[in-house]
Amino acid sequence: MLPPVPRGRTSRYSGILFVEAGINQYYYEMSNIREHCSWVHSEEKEAATEKAKDLIRMSVARVRHLEPLREFDLPVNKVAIVVGGGIGGMTSALSIANQRHEVHLIEKEKELGGMARKLHYTLEGLDVQAYLKDLIGRVYKHPLIHVYTNATIPEATGYVGNFTTKVKSDRGLTEINHGAAVIAIGADLYTPTEYLYGEDDRVMNHLDLEEKITNRDEKIVNAQSVVMIQCVGCRNEERNYCSKICCSESIKNALKLKEIKPDVDVCILFRDIRSYGFKEDYYREAAGKGVRFIRYEPENKPQVEPGEAEDGRPVLKVTAMDYVLGKNLELDADIIALAAAIIPSAGSQEISKLFKVGFGAGRFLSGSPCQITACRFCRGRRLPVRDSPLSQAYIGNGRSGLWGCRPCFNPSCK
Ligand SMILES: Cc1cc2nc3c(=O)[nH]c(=O)nc-3n(C[C@H](O)[C@H](O)[C@H](O)COP(=O)(O)OP(=O)(O)OC[C@H]3O[C@@H](n4cnc5c(N)ncnc54)[C@H](O)[C@@H]3O)c2cc1C
Ligand code: SF4
Image 1: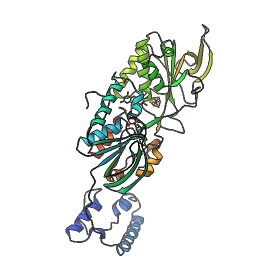
Image 2 (image 1 turned 30 degrees about the horizontal axis):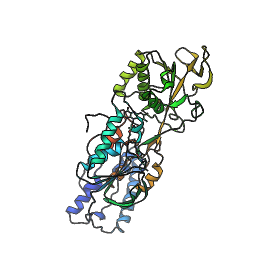
Image 3 (image 1 turned 135 degrees about the horizontal axis):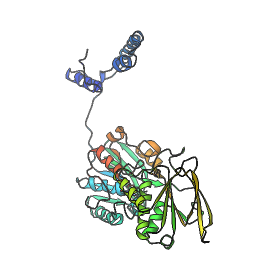
Image 4 (image 1 turned 90 degrees about the vertical axis):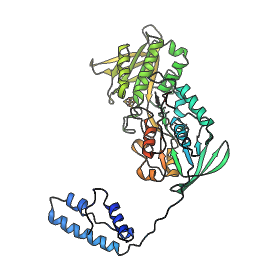
């Protein structure tokens, strides 16, 4: 008989008791009468008792075949690899290297930066490119970080604390022995097949719009009317999740458009506005500056077709049902920006197989406790983003409890 032990700790505590009694702890076997009988069958006492007897019989039968196992310590290689050289990966690499561990940072593109290369300003007004330049500079200058660009990983083998990964890159073929792997391969943007995207160059995604606003592209500066359509490619049957970034991105672009050309007509067609946390203030600011928010229902999506405005200029005619006014609206758009969904990174299948990392909601990589014990951490954007987009990297930090600070675009956060 064993004494009562804290809930949820039964097998561990009982194993310890075996050790203290001088018995090999792997002889221990548990019949879980409490959870598998008393709790789940509290209304059927007789049947529960019979089941308990069966469980005990099965445990006794199993114990007869148990063998003693021996535990031993394995050396752990202190070198880490980081797969993915976006903000998440670079911040991980710096954080590990600042704790005096050697890091190999593996990026498939020819330059570091990831998605942030396409971002220029944040809703709060921070300069993303300046932040990125500084971060990349710190990565390259760090004596303990080795950067591999144009890199692919043909093979990854090993076990807890001792892995070997082969990397083909600009440096040739390298074999890296390491104890930890941080997977920070980020996410991609959905390529829309709807609303004339790819057929008419006046239709673009919200990242392209940001790029063109930053470059003061003529078409944008001269536009009289810009229509943004939200939830393109997600919150549907195929991808039943919210990308969590695009409402804020559209509000950000709308405010920027109003800043450079106050009389431009900006209209955002949305299903729900999900500008998380304090970003709600920017939604109010945009509404205050005359940005029109019009809700549409998924079963009655906006329609887009080429047409002509009353003044004769060629436009894209956007028809949408306004549920507040209860009637169909026709909008003339010089530019249409689509809030395209965030989708899993193209190589996530291969990375998942190589590093035995599972998938979570939306087929984004997840980090389960078993991967964490195996020293493989998912960092950076591995899910549709939460309130602060870069908080996923923070989650990776928090889980490992090892790698240090949270990456963000805040210049005061080094
Ligand atoms: C439209 C939009 C607006 C945004 N606005 C903001 C904002 O205002 N503020 C903010 O904080 N964040 C914003 N974000 C989010 C921000 O871009 C991301 O949170 C951040 O850049 C993610 O960094 P990451 O390192 O996790 O991923 P990524 O930047 O996607 O980097 C992943 C890297 O991994 C590499 N990679 C992928 N597969 C492999 C592989 N198999 N092997 C090697 N390398 C690989 C990729 O090439 C890439 O360089 C926005 C994102 C979008 C899409
Ligand atoms: S953030 Fe907004 S636009 Fe993006 S999927 Fe969610 S609700 Fe739709």
